[in-house]
Every structure is written in structure tokens, then in C-alpha cells.
Image (cartoon, rainbow, N blue to C red; front, side):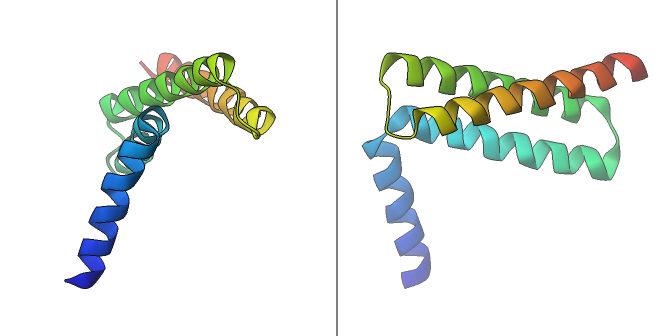
Length: 98
């Protein structure tokens, strides 16, 4: 029980400390989960929703870094652009298979 309480309090604390980063993290984690489900089932709605969440999280990261830069701005921007490029290839795959 102590283990779960620790993770729950960490979860709550991180959501209160930096809400935009928390939402972006949740979007990326949900996208990863959906893309894993797509790898198992090969149903395109999971892949489309997963890549859409990746695009949304990437744009959110870029906007957040433009408004309020952090010490790791370059790394975050590079990761966001990398996510956008990968999701672009993912959407190309979707449109080729439909």
C-alpha cells in the first residue's frame, strides 16, 4: 500500500507543479499505449489516434518552449521536431494503406 501511495502522491505533485508538462506527458504516454495496441491488432484507428496525440503533444511542447523557455529548450524543441517528423511518416503510412 505504501508503494501505491508514493506513486499516487508523486502523480498528484507533478500535476500541480507543472500542469502543461504533465498534460504533454500524459498525451505521449497514451500515444505510446495506442501505438502498442496498434502493433498487436493492426487496426488503423489506434494508429491514427496515437499519431494525432503525438502531433498534439509536439505542438504543445513547441508552444510552451516558445512562451516560457527552460534551460533544456533546445533538447525539448529537438525532441518535438523529431516527434513531428516521425508522426509525419506515420501518417504517410496510414494514407498509403487506406
